[in-house]
Length: 263
Ligand SMILES: Nc1ncnc2c1ncn2[C@@H]1O[C@H](COP(=O)(O)OP(=O)(O)OP(=O)(O)O)[C@@H](O)[C@H]1O
Image 1 (spheres, rainbow, N blue to C red):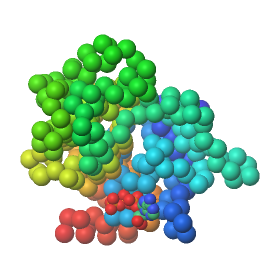
Image 2: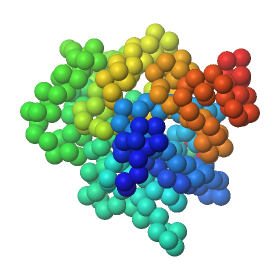
Image 3: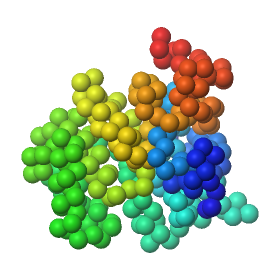
Image 4: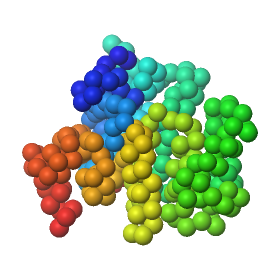
């Protein structure tokens, strides 16, 4: 795909076009289009059931779209032909695409029986087929950066929730991704541990990491995001800078959500 993002004029790292998704007779995504330029931090907000997680799952090939397209840079993952058939890329191209993004879940999703080190190194070695010594050196550096030096040999249940989430961010970063997706990364954490994780995410943003973050942390969206997307009923209802969407929303549904949220 050669399209350029409106905001920066740069080719998008991630691009979703007219993507739709239904579960049975329920349409959960309605013609979603989202281009993300290098260095952008896009916060996706909106009421429960609005389709935020499904958008991330479709973006990261955990779910298949029914229409539209998904691409990571020049690598098209799914596209729709003129007759409306959606075609996914070959297994090998999907493997390449999976090397371009990292995914951080609300519930960490670390393998419970593996050490922190193995959790971080597993995909770079198995999926990206990189040399073990190189991956382990990078993993140690990333764990240190996440404040987890000395935790390499522990298993997830020996860590706090905040530490587990930081380990899962290290795991995502060890893929050297072009973009990171976060699905409500702090909702399972109490406020103190939430702060630790948000601090790490802020630092990544400062370093220029491209990120899409589904979040209920409005302060994070206000202070760190370059763009806020408000989703409701499976559609993008409003998007713009944090000042625009959070400070002066133009759509009634956004205003109602923000009023309910801060009330
Ligand atoms: N695998 C599935 N099968 C059937 N319905 C699903 C499935 N996954 C999601 N849904 C439905 O899709 C809709 C959107 O769900 P989704 O989790 O994407 O919303 P969300 O905005 O992330 O909500 P929340 O903020 O509560 O996580 C909901 O009605 C949900 O019940």
